[in-house]
Image 1 (cartoon, rainbow, N blue to C red):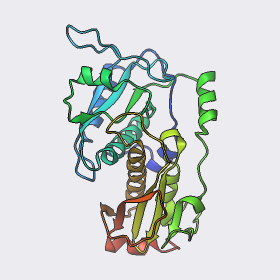
Image 2 (image 1 turned 30 degrees about the horizontal axis):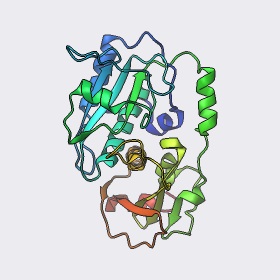
Image 3 (image 1 turned 30 degrees about the vertical axis):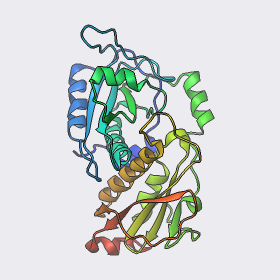
Amino acid sequence: MEFKIPVTQLIRQRRSVRNYSPDGMEPDMERQVREVLDLHTEGPMGNRVAFHLVHRKSAIAGQKVKLGTYGFIKGAQHFVAGEVKIGTFTELDFGYLLEKIMLYLVDMGLGTCWLGGTFKRSELADILNTSEDVVIPAITPVGYPAPSMSRRELLIRKGAKSDQRKPWNELFFDGEFGKPLQHMDNEGSLLPLEMVRLAPSASNKQPWRVVRSENNFHFYLNRTPGYGGFAPNVDIQHIDMGIAMAHFELSSWELGIEGSWKIMDHGKVVKKGTEYIVSWQTNDDCVSNLSPSG
């Protein structure tokens, strides 16, 4: 699929929508949403995710199971839920795929909002009839945003500091930790890192750290101690890392910089509480694009 709007613009304009038009989506729009879900089923680490468009009034025959309004979500008639088998890199692939889906939905004029700890997984598990070896890491409402944000929505954004991001020198490093990467004014080869900086994360913790080494970008998770115990078998901050991967990959491709995700011998000394996750290896013929003047 191709974006109608440049992905770097979508990343900048996207926000968490908590107030929706109660009219819901037209059947044709529902069909388009399902097409997007069907095209995003396998993550870069090999896990397969089954995404479903679920109506709020969905119920199992013979059971009184209906979706509630989770957290501070108002007016949403549909939710996107994904189920994935518990395993290695489960949440990484899930976050990567759902963030891609959400950017396509924004491109279609729809609103979304990451929900990781404010929905009833048992409720959705009953509706989707999931097995015991499957987990639903997160969901998003989807629909047309209401004409204006409610007072409550504005207060939530202010309280969560949703528009604030950590500075470059805390997130990106040149060759080793402790040596900040030069900021290139969001242009050229380092633009994908700016898109990582703008990525959403649970409670806006921004746990990603990236070390550039020649044509490799090593991604690390800087954990927030004691954070993320919303549900068994769900690592919320691994979801955040998957989101960061999606932003980096999509914006790299938009610049014509090709590469792939690999587990590598990164050779970096990391501080306690920081763990290596994955690396982006740029293709050899794209290395020239990574020069400071690129």
